[in-house]
Image 1 (cartoon, helix red, strand yellow):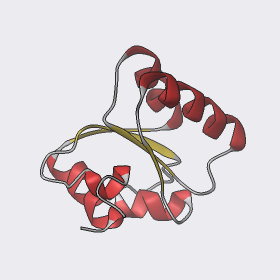
Image 2 (cartoon, rainbow, N blue to C red; image 1 turned 30 degrees about the vertical axis):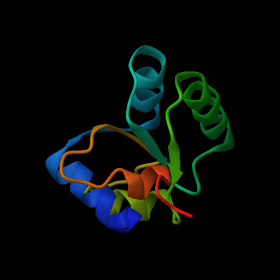
Image 3 (cartoon, rainbow, N blue to C red; image 1 turned 60 degrees about the horizontal axis):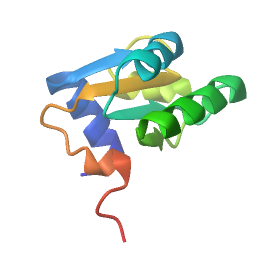
Length: 102
């Protein structure tokens, strides 16, 4: 399963949260399974997510394209710079975390 399919399936069948502020809040208070960032996420947000995810041992997946495209993959009519996957549902989370890659 590729990353795009995994993101679509996680949004459709699992529990996800959209937005940089909400993702950062979850990293501070809870523990998402994985964080997805668009390639054009502002550096300040990227650095803060990176720091918090390392502290919580949460993997980060950087989506290959911009936030408009990530929003489209998620089925949203707006940009999505950051999202947190709380429950992957039927998605193969290994496609996002890099687990199982050689």
